[in-house]
Image 1: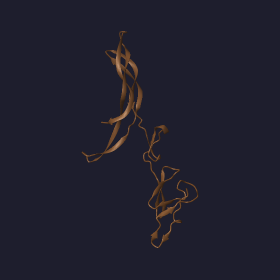
Image 2 (image 1 turned 45 degrees about the vertical axis):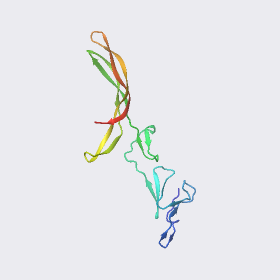
Image 3 (image 1 turned 180 degrees about the horizontal axis):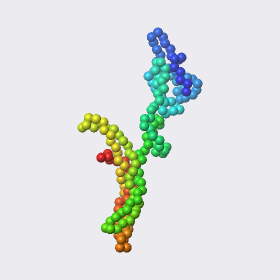
Image 4 (image 1 turned 90 degrees about the horizontal axis):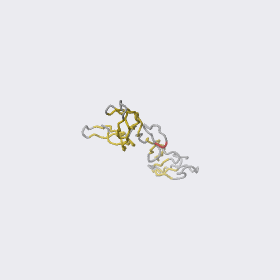
Length: 175
């Protein structure tokens, strides 16, 4: 897109025109258009750039994406302009091997626990009269009961029932 400023502006004494022209080279969505002074428009080829029209010409505004960290494309949540993104919360189940001991009997089993990061927010605390950080915690969302057979020192067995985490989600403010 060819953006021109001073050339198409016209001045008559102290009177200025109220529009600026965008180059007529045929490129871009706004090519050959007159843009009102004070108006802005997005770059059709880059969602992170917009232009503002002033009586002195056009100013390119590049959107900054603070604290943007890398994550896979499928884990990205883009803003309304499709420029900046945040990563989906990484809260999930993770296997852990534990030894269950009950009434002198035991067995090593694989269980699941919740791990990962959740959204951090800043809120105004009216009691403390200041901003405070709040964090959502990665916690158990659903579970199922499972049964295992524990081995006892005398050669006998003992049935044992436990809660097995099946899904986790970001919920509740962490204490």
